[in-house]
Each structure stands twice: as C-alpha cells, then as structure tokens.
Length: 294
Image (cartoon, rainbow, N blue to C red; front, side):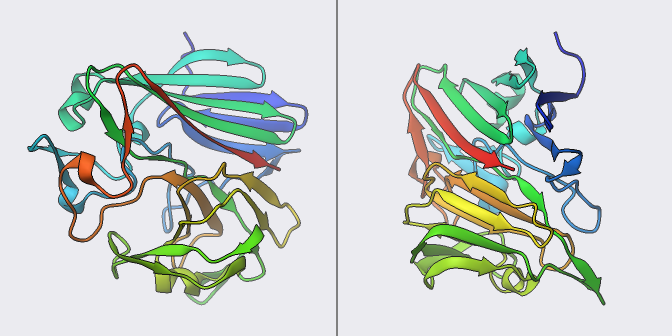
C-alpha cells in the first residue's frame, strides 16, 4: 500500500500532485510552472478542498438527522481525513475513504468516498464518487475548491489582482446567493447582473465575500491571467459556481463547482430538509466531476 502523503501523476510535461490528507490537489505544474495556489499564512493556507458531505458552514456548527443533533466542521469530513490509495497508474490515481466510528459520530451514514485524478497531457479530470453503503437514504452536499495562482502586486496593505479576469463561454444572468457581512451564511437569493466577464479585483470580495452563481447553465469558464498562463475549466453544469479569494491578501482565485450550498442564516436544522441538499438511495453511486486544462 502506498505510504507517502503526496502522490504524483505525470503526463508529458504536466505533473499533478495529490494530498492524501483531504484527498485534494496539492500541485498542478506544466514545465515546472505552478498553476495551483500554494497557500500562505496571511491569506488562505489551503490549496483545494474535496467537499463532502456539506458545503461550507453549518449554522452554529450543528444539524439534525431524524431530530438527533450532530456537529460537523467547515466543508464536511473529507478535508480532515487521510485517504487510502486504491489504485495508481503513471497518469491516474484513485483515493478512497470509508465511513467509520469517527465519521458516524458526526454524520450518521455509511458511505465510501473516492477521489480520482486522471491526467492526459494538460487536461486533468477530477472525479468524486460516493456510494451509499447504508440501508437508508443518504443526504449530502459535494463540491470542488481549487485555488489558482494569479499575478498580483502588493500595494500598501492589499494584494492587487487587477488585470486578471474570468470569462464564461456565454453571457448569462444568474441568481446569486448573498452572504451575511461575515461571509458565513446565506441571507437571500436574488438576481445578479448579466455576466460574461469578471474583472478580478479584491474590492469584489470585500463587497460580496463570495460570488455564488446559481439557476444558470454553467460549464466552460476561462481564467485569463496577466502572465498568459490561462486555465480553462469545464464545470459539468453544477447547481452552483462559487468564485472566491480573501478580500485583502493572496494572489489567487478559487473557481468552485458545487452541488449544494452553505447554510442559510435561519436554517432548517434537519439535513434532509436543507436547501440544495442531495439524496442518494441505498447501494446507489453518485458521481461529480470537472476538468482543468492548462
């Protein structure tokens, strides 16, 4: 069995490293150029998150299943877990994690979670699968959280990211989930302006904390970077696309496909009744995927 914490796959000049702690991306390189944000103490220390079984925060950190109260940390269980290497090839790796005594105390369902990373040239396909190994319906949210480095310069006490932009394939008018002033919980869902291109500025995230577009058909999105090292993502039509960076420090942008949403400010505590929740029947398998082109 693979013992190393970081597992690396390669295809030509492209190299991807995956962290077994959290089953998430650790590095994406082409000709030794790093595309993935590498974390910073003064900003976001993370690089990516495999999100399951709840997106972002639960109000007061708690929820109920059939009236019984449970607690779970931000973005669920997998980011805190150490996954096994189930299968590995030169350009592909599959990590897996199964429910256990610790997970059942936080999330009362039996499951198997797998994250698969397949690299073909500069195309990386990320696939999460969940199998419900319980005898009852399983309720969950799921999503990706890759953070991409973007050129920036520090001016006074803010990292200026101007000159980089995100472009969607088609112009559309989404709804957006608007967060409270702390950026933790949803206070409302409402219309957003027409979107085709987002010129990245820290001021956007001082105003909105996180953009969370929904109720729109979203697939291809391109991150245009000032250094010309663009990133193209195919999001595979998720229910929500979150775009986020810390509001002051950090030269990065997260483009996050989600099937699920954070808690609203006055939530129904029962997991099965939460907005945006998904249901998986016993013995069924759910697949969630997106791709990154560099």
